[in-house]
Length: 592
Image (cartoon, rainbow, N blue to C red):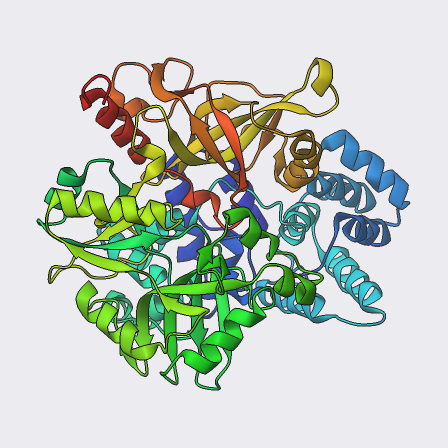
């Protein structure tokens, strides 16, 4: 199968839902792509025109895109808006209008003067770069120019791309599978490509190295300042002896701070950039953290991880999570810095002056971190305690909670205790107070649907359908319907927060048996407190693992008030974690 245009491939990808079928269609697209265009096409399959961390913002609101469609088709903007309301999709509206304007031609017919990948991406970069007086007019002119050359089908997907509505049902793992199938001898090479992506967060770079130099060169890729490393994640357990057994009998028990995890990069030019787990640049929101690092970080080039925590240095007191999230605002930063002082508690050093530390064991990384950081009131190391006995781990946990932390991250200290970028393995295990008992489990879940409110909640959403992430299948599997814990202000804010994620039908990556009034692409993550996990035939989380024709459901779920804007949907609690919590509760003695 060969595709004449990217739009044809998008259409085919959109029409299938099975993982293998998606991979095969994607492989056909990549196999027919010239080597020089492969990186760009990989970005386009992600719905991007550059690596996500590059922060390329087209600055195209839907209203401006509507005007561009009107200009390109000779239509009144109100007519375009009305058709968008009717179809529920600007891309479909543009396709219909352009088909009418071009006499019903459905595609380019292979004509040479249609859109090209290079032409589209170059123009979109020009749109993103348009700033200052007259920039909106320039953006409008450039987008309308692209649409004038587009076929109706191309217009559909171009509009979805620029308005962040390109939802093909594929994630980065599927693209890596397709790359492995075409260029690395089969899907067995996927782990090599995945590690390459995890240490640079740049799918185009991985594709370029793969096609030019082969899988062995991808395997040799190392971290480098300026390209974020995907965060290593932790499993969770509630039993000290079990944790120590998993970690080989001893561990480093690090305080688990209640803040925003950031990765700080200092590049050769001295610039310092802060990235969140979602690869957002937040240096502007935390200029005081940047200042502390500039003064207290020793290596000329470095990649460091830490937790930004609301912190009263004079009192030595950690403040609640909600206060540090106040600092995520984009305006009034100077006042926010004064109102909510923060500290950076560093816990990992991944790179220092030419040395990739990710494959070094934890004790070496910790020693290098201590040498690299000059500790001050606002630049500190996480408290870390070496323990080899359950009683010592319990004592460390109690002290961490007393000191205002969530609990502990217990880290392996053996020779194999490397930094597993992007992985949730058993080298790190969280021990948090939230799941010390089976009746108090907090989890982070993605919103995938909403139900219309009734009575006092008429006119707003009354409850949300929430899902856990299944990374093996790249699916978000429903686990609960939650309407408790939301304040009136929360409910009023939900429609605007969720509007950009609305979908006309169940998204391809969502597995749910419910039919909410509105579906959403996974994007917004909430923290949920539940009485317990139970089995239900109505929910799909853990269905294949429980194997009782039932999935996991949450009893008496309640929103804690924490919007996890710092987490991507793929960072949500996994179905494996939920199954582990459920089975752990089943094993626990009654009343424990």
